[in-house]
Structure formats: structure tokens, C-alpha cells
Length: 229
Image 1 (cartoon, rainbow, N blue to C red):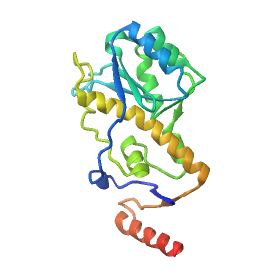
Image 2: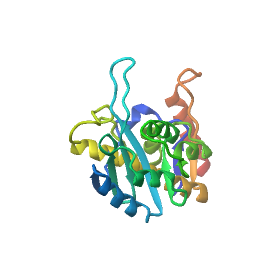
Image 3: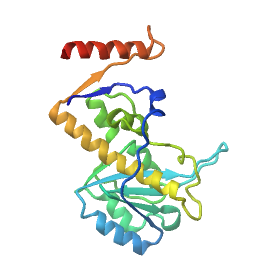
Image 4: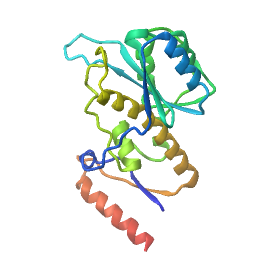
């Protein structure tokens, strides 16, 4: 069945979608010993999803270092609490790896933040923002890209929570794991679509262009249906 996607996904539609949830196991890493064990396991995987979280700053001229590094497989996510263990040797080994397929979103920004905790030479990473451009998607946010490809909502409710808290809540853990895991799902789906070419993209207009986005989208959908009939 041909998949319909949009060059720009309507943000207002996202709240109407079913909520996505991370389906696997989550492990919180707070010691260098556990980080070594986790990295040894992750280095046996064929693909990994990455993301980071930083405690938000609500005052001008105040900033915080990256507090959390999330690394996910298809069914497991490790949450490395960098505010406890920093960039350990094992974590640096993982970040510098060039053999495993590693995917993330806006990874250059994350690399910049991680380097404030310790120097390393970044290994090979795939940024899904670059991948979506190749099939005509212009959105850059994880939430919009995921909604576009899978018709599900990634809640951002925990995004501005305290990632340096003594203990992360279950909601924080689930949110952090989902973001890293979602990068794998997006990458795999984009690979499938590029290979099969089994998709149709609807071009929507910006709000400041003539006509409304909704009207243009509806017209494009009708045209597509007529072409199929």
C-alpha cells in the first residue's frame, strides 16, 4: 500500500494522533562500571539510536551541561547519567566508533554539548534530518517527522523537566528512551521508502502563501485519488 506523506506536517494534527510509547526495557546507568557493561553490549548491535537531554535554563545567561545520553537498540535503551559519571572511557569509545550504524537527529548540536563534558573524535553518525530531505520532507523536528511517517504522536511533555534530578521519574525515562528509539524507526522507514519508492508526497503551502494549507492539502489529496482511480 502506497504511503502518503507531507513535505510539511500540520502541527495541529499531532494532538489528534494516538500516543507512541517506547516498547522495550530501560536501564539507567550511574556508575562507570555499569557504563562499561552497557557499552560492551551496545557494541554488539547492528544499529543504535542516540539522543541527549539537558536541564533547561529559565534565566538569561544561565546554561547547563548535557545531563543524559540515551542510546537505544530495537528493544532496549540505556540512559547514561552524565551528570553523575561524565564522559567515561567506555562512553567515549562508543561515541568514537565507526563500525556500527548510529542514527540521531540534529546530532551536531548534541556533539557540541557532549564535547563540553570531554573531548573525543566523533565516529560515524547518520542524521535523520538529512535523510528526510532526500524524500522531500522539510520538517526538522522529531515529533513532526515521526507523526508524518507513522501517524503517531511523540509527547514532549517531559522535555523541559529537570534532567539533573536525583532520580529520574518513570515518565522522564520513557520520554528519553522513546526519542532515541524513534530515530531507529525513522531511519529504517526512510530506508524502506527510498528502496521501494512506495510513497506519495503531498506538497502543502505555507500559511503566508495564497490559499490555506488545509485547502491545498485537500486539493492535493483529491488529485492523488483521481490519479489512482
